[in-house]
Image (cartoon, rainbow, N blue to C red; front, side, top):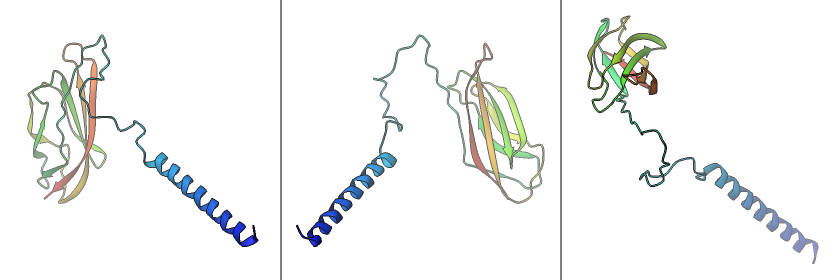
Length: 152
């Protein structure tokens, strides 16, 4: 084998090795390693001694507030199908501006009073929701979500 042929073989081997490494890296970075879950049909459920409980949490991605007023119209509620009590805490720009505790399923708010007023503009909001067993007061699950506050 002459030098030119040997060089071509080395180049081909290098290209194949690099292609295999890139393929393996792509699988590693983009492959589904069982972390995305499966469509749930309850056939794989593990039987436990604890009854399954479900909590619905209503969310939103934005609210519209009236400028320079503390009383604001909202739609914040504990869905009626829940068996838990809820507490709500609203933050705007990282500052707590409203909270409510022990809200029964099927109850909520169409109007709230903020602890401060806001000028016209856009703000970042965060809602924290905590769920509790109504009999024992034991904490169940909860959620927090971000939303946009549009004051106009």
